[in-house]
Image (cartoon, rainbow, N blue to C red; front, side):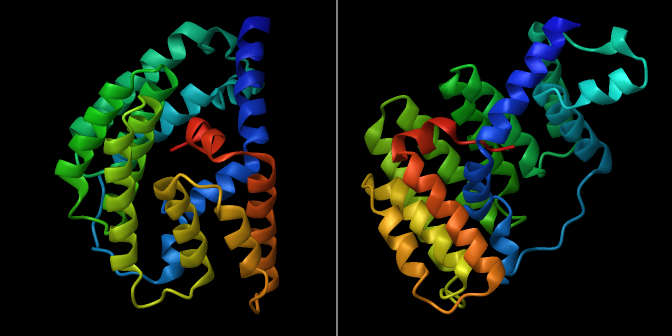
Amino acid sequence: MDKNNTFVNKRIDKLISMNKLNIVLISICLGLLACSKTEVAQHEYNREAIAKRDSALFIYTGFDTNKKLEEGRQDEIFSDEERAPIAMSLLSESISLDSTYIYSYTLKAQLLKDEGRYIEGIEVMEDAFRYTKGYMEDNIVRIHLIKGILYELMDSTSLAKENYYSALTQFDLITKDNPSDICNMINRIVLENFYNEEELALEKLKDLKKRKLSERDIILVNNIIEYFENNSRAELVEEMSVY
């Protein structure tokens, strides 16, 4: 039991410590593109595929443990060694059920990234490009961004920049009708920071505070500024989460 709790606490501590980072990542085309009012194709995903992906997430992060403890199902708690393989298997099943569901690919790439299996992660994202690019416009941004990070972690600078550039140009294309939206502006600053390899994001984010912002937007910008004040671009790349 202590072993399992240690694993869960470690994963939860990491996620809590990355709270500000997760806000940034959400704004990097991983969730907040909806606020830019971009058009996306209507598509209904296989519910069983979604359920398997969600189960993989809960098992990998250890979020399933507290529920099992509360329900007296201690014997069903997975060990450290079991979590990643079980999650990986569930994600493969999810993709088999619905090859168009992008979030199964991105989580699988995250698991592979965490294990240092960068080439395999890139292969997963290439499959994602092949099967999901026609279903949501921002899928292409997401895929190229993740591939760029994986290439950068492999020290393949030219391939990383190529993918960051593709992510940035695709983002500009799908937000061209609303470039002044605060979410779009934040997204672009962070994406540009990946591509340029310069520590320019912080100053550009601070410039956003000169604009007339809603209370919600002020909180969002301040949280992201706080992250960039305390973390380097290299740390952003290393800690990138695609849950």
